[in-house]
Length: 533
Image 1 (cartoon, helix red, strand yellow):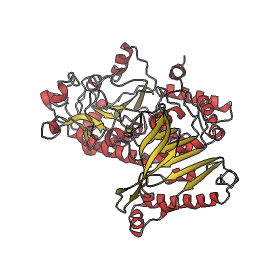
Image 2 (spheres, helix red, strand yellow):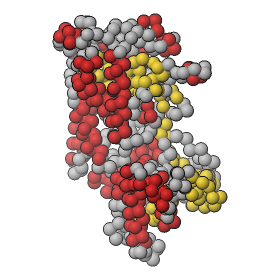
Image 3 (tube, helix red, strand yellow):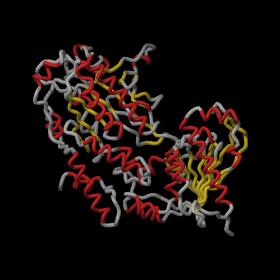
Image 4 (cartoon, helix red, strand yellow):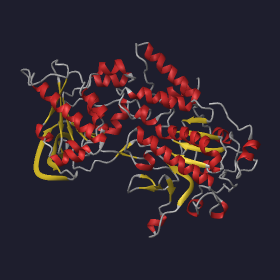
């Protein structure tokens, strides 16, 4: 990105009643360059341009987008299965958004280490946290600490080439269990039975992932969903990808699809749920056809009628209760059969079944990361917030109410937790941007004339900021101030031009193998390419 200053501060000030002439543009910091952060940056600029006159704000803003990793795009690059065709379209849209002179990318800058809240507050009028989640929610089952139990997040990091992830993955289990009823569980299951050559041809997986999947020993996979068909959280796209796995026979229990009229009626009230249930019945019909072609070894056919070499079982109404093991290693998964009412409540039957497996993957949710200097709601596993406005937690702890922390905001998973699709992220961003603009338009001085509540002042997060009027809290209006600060600490951020160099290199590497893209995974190599070294 090129450095951008508003060259017409005086004319902007004349158009907006609550701005003086000492610098008219807004300065916004966004922490996290995944979909939530990029979409929010774009929406902020668009909404500001539309509503500036109405709110008494300038039409110009500079957004500095900070990212801990050496490349942008977060979840889209490192959290989605590589065989999702929609990834390239989303990535392209995000990249176009970043190619904007008012958005300045600062990758390889670790918030809380390289730069702190105390550094940002004096330099920006508002700070938006769009941090995601890279850790699994803990699996609270007996036997969860056995060798062979893996969180989905770590496995996703491996096959997506996460710079800080492991480079090796044990795939020697012949029978594998996956726990979870959402899209991540479906992704993990699919990658565990997919042919490595198919992935290499159409995706950007690096060599270590291809070699690992090529050596995968799994020929039997069991996916366990605690509740029923109508309560699963799969997208139709995920199910359609399940329906097209070469060499894989899908197996279901017909009894799981015996839904009563009330359950069907309730499921039909929500469009996405209805479509999912309809697609699951398509999966059931396909499974019946596959079973009709059983060979001498007990294998049926795949979706094209070819002999299958792997079985993929989908178990609804099965709640895992214990992981069994011997000599510290997984040997089986014990599940309890359940039944699910039309209201979605799960009921236990007391009937237990043990499935021999040598590996268990759990995809029961991510835990959004805490952020240094920002209150965290450990109960909901999100940054403490009220409709996206960061708030203290001292009020509730003292029997009162939380106090909103002016100028600090959260969006995406940092705000609502790891739920929802890309559409949810966009609608979230629009709501938060509306709040930010309204707050900036109505901004008034708070504790001791600064922009922060007293609770945060004592923590040293806002000691240098003063209220300038008209929402401009940051006393340091020099847009290059943050660059000088990072340089003084030996930090070399990777900007949008640096990302384009990485992208060009990955495309060139892919072209040598007849592929569109081949991902670079070593963080030092990424830095060298991005910085032109």
